[in-house]
Structure formats: structure tokens, C-alpha cells
Amino acid sequence: MEQKQNQKNSYYVTTPIYYINDVPHIGHAYSTIAADTLARYYRKQLGSDNVKFVTGTDENSQKTIEAAKEAKLDLNKYTKQTAASWKQVWDRLDINYDRFIRTTNKDHIKTVQTILQKVYETGDIYKGIYEGKYCFRCEAFYKDDELVDGLCCPVHKKEVDHIKEENWFFKLSKYEKPILNHIQNNPNFIRPKSRRNEILAFIRDKGLEDFSISRASQDWGIRLPFDESQVAYVWFDALLNYVTAAGYGTEEFNKWWPADLHIVGKDIIKFHCLYWPGMLMSAGLDLPRSIFAHGFFTIDGEKVSKSLGNAIDPVELTEKYGVDPLRYYLLREIPFGSDGDFSSERFDVLYNSELANNLGNSVSRIAAMLLKYNDGKYNETLNARPIEIDEYIRDCRFDRCLESIFERLTELNAAIEEFKPWEAYKTDSTGTIEFLSSLAVEIRQIGEVLEPFLPNTAIRINKIFSTGIVADRPEILFPRIEN
Ligand code: MSP
Image (cartoon, rainbow, N blue to C red; front, top):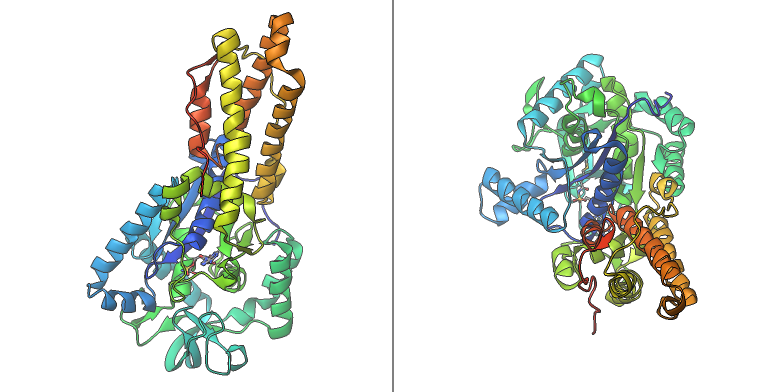
């Protein structure tokens, strides 16, 4: 299946939808900030009306049932409350999503039932007995050889359940060849390359088996339209959020689908790169253009998770550093796609050297000189040298984008040291003002290019360097962190 590149002048990016039994931690914030950055970038390129950024909550999970029980709350109340608290966190982090989807939303339930019916009518759903191991924390089936010591889930290291029940199965095996062909013909379908190779090796070594798409024993979830006694398997339901949010069943759908990019963590690529394409093929829908799997944040080498008790609260970090520095740290420190260890020491170093020194000082220095030598006025008709980050953005190389932008700052600072405006002004005031003007237009441009990454800083830079005049003696953008 060939990709329909460039046929639609729109951009649709998604994050995974999050399980609500957990509170948002740094790993969740990572996917969401990356998607927000892309959405902000493409809004500038294509206009806000042509960009859709969707995030949300995955609520029909067995974990939700357990968590509600623990909180002694009725399920509807529990899901409403926790979904609201996730939203609040994204608001605190200035996440500018276009839709927050909940899998308990009416339109989503309708999508799931319509597609289940369609896939059923295609002949891709049949009844069978599921017997095997299941980790409800992962909401995933495991083969014996995948378990740790034959007993425990490889991710949570907790004992898995043994399930035996009559379920409905989806014929994923039927789509093995087409999925393989698609991956092979579309090198960008799964990124980065290492994940693509992992998926190709999985197909080669294990092949694609049919999987159970329903639960008989669960009371909470979306009912199968052809068998009311069962609810949809939570992954079958959750993956479909991407088409619901694109407006499945309405005219809007053609504008957004296929999605341009699903951002996911590396732990959920099997669902996104194998199950999801099979489901879409069966339903007669186009496949997303790309799935990018980022790496994992570890803390002292351990996975971050509620069960391990080492989760870092992103809101707490913003209280110490501010929202933009958190975004900066997450996107700058670790190449998107690689794993990385979270370190407060590194955060402090990056904050002080790059944000406080390089960016913050440049802004105040240039503004102060213009105020001193020319009442803040500068020649805004000069052109800045463009900073090209388009290719890096397309490759999700956020670290390289930021590096390019900050390299320009370093160059500006070197130019100031060389020109020495404080001396040059004495003999050549016109030339000095022209030089300072060129710095002002450069810094304005830096503010603009930084907007998707550091939205608040961009606004502040734009206020300081308003058109043709430094509006005011600037406040300090990033007060140094002293420990
Ligand atoms: N509900 C499913 C996704 C369904 S999408 C159709 C799910 N939810 S999750 O809340 O468990 O995880 C959501 C995302 O957070 C995943 O992409 C996961 O990889 C990411 N992260 C969870 N912990 C993480 C880190 N420690 N580091 C980086 N990302 C991590 O899976």
C-alpha cells in the first residue's frame, strides 16, 4: 500500500491515551510534550485549522476497575475525576491539545461498535477459547517463554493471571503479509529504525497470531455489538481512539485521516505497529503515515512507575524550574527514540548554562545595549539568517532542533565579543546601532523558532523585542538555580 504523501494539507498527531489508574509522571509528560511541540510547529506552517493534536485517557481497562475499588468510588465518578485531573496536569504544562478524548465518550463507543461490526462482517472475527497468561497491568497476553521465571510479567515483574474463557478473536494472521509488505515498502512507517527492525524481526521469528479482542468476565467496557455479553479488549478499544478523534463517520474524517504521526513509547509498539495496522486493514481504513517510538526515562536505571514508587511529578518540576525549562530539558537532553536517565544535576546544568546564560543573558544584554545606545529603537527591516529546522522536525530530532537554535545564540554572543559595541559606539554610532539591530532581528527570530519548544519564553521575547523597539528593560528570563 503506497503512502499518500502530501495529499492532505493538514497534520494530525496523537499521543498514547493514558491509563487513569496512574497519575501523570515524567514519562507520560514526555510523549505529550513532544506531540505538543510538533503540533505547535505545524500550526505555524499550516495554520491552526489544519492541525489536530489529540491526547486523552484510556478508561475501559481492568486497572480502572481495581483503582476505583481502591478509591471506593463508583466507576463513572472515578473516571470523571481522574480524567479531569489528567487534564489539569496538561493545562499546567501548557499542553495545547485540540481534543482530549476519553474512551468513555459517546462518539468513541459508537466508533468502536461500528468498526467491530464491520470487522465482524468482513469475516475477521471468530469465537474461540482463550487460555493463557495475562498481565492486567500491561493489559497484554504473554507466552510462557516471555515470562520471567515462567511466572511473572517481564515489565512489572508481578505474577500474571491464568485466564481461560470463551472469547472473540481477530484474524491478525490473515494480515501478516500485507503488514510486512507495508513496513518494508514504507521505511518511515515505524521509526526509529531500531524499532522498525525489532518489529520486522518479531514478524520473522514469531509471525502474527490471531488475538482475543473481547473479555467475557469483565463488566466495564464497550459491549460487542454482535455479542452483548462481552466487552471489547481494552487495546482494540483504545487504538480506535485515533479514528474517533479524527471524526470517524463524519465528513471531517477525510481531512484528518490517515494520521500523520502516532507518538508512542517503545513498550507499546507491538500494539501500534502490528495489531493496529491489521485492524485498520480489516476495517478498510488507511494506515497512519508514521509511528514514532520514543525511549524510556529511567531513574537510576529503573523504570519509572507507580508500582516502583519512583515516579517524578512533572508539575513539581515546573514549580522549581518553570514549564519551558522542563520542556527544554526533556527534548534537549535525550535524542528522541533513545532511552535516558533522568538527573536533577544534569537538569540544573542545562538550565544554568543554556537557558540562563546563553538564552537569558543574550536577550537581556542585547536589549540593554539597545536601550542604552538608541533608546531601545532598532531597524526591524533587516533580515535574520533563517534557522532551518524543518528536516529535524520531520525526523523528530528535537535535540538537534534546539542545538541548531542555541548554536545561533552562541554565534551572536561571539559576534558581540568581537564587535565590542561598548567601544565601537564611541567612534561609529551608526554602525553600532546597525549591528545591534541585526542582533535584535536575530533574537526575535530565535524567539519565533523557539515557540513550539518554549512557548512562554517565545511570548516574553516577542514582548521585549516588539517591532522596531525594545519595549522595556527586560526582566530576567531564567533566574539562575543555586543549589
Ligand atoms: N493506555 C495505553 C496506551 C493506549 S494508546 C492507544 C498505555 N498507557 S500508559 O499510561 O501505560 O502509558 C502511556 C505512555 O507513557 C506509553 O507510551 C509509555 O511508553 C509512556 N511511558 C510510561 N512510562 C514511561 C517512562 N518511564 N519513560 C517514557 N515513557 C513512558 O500504555
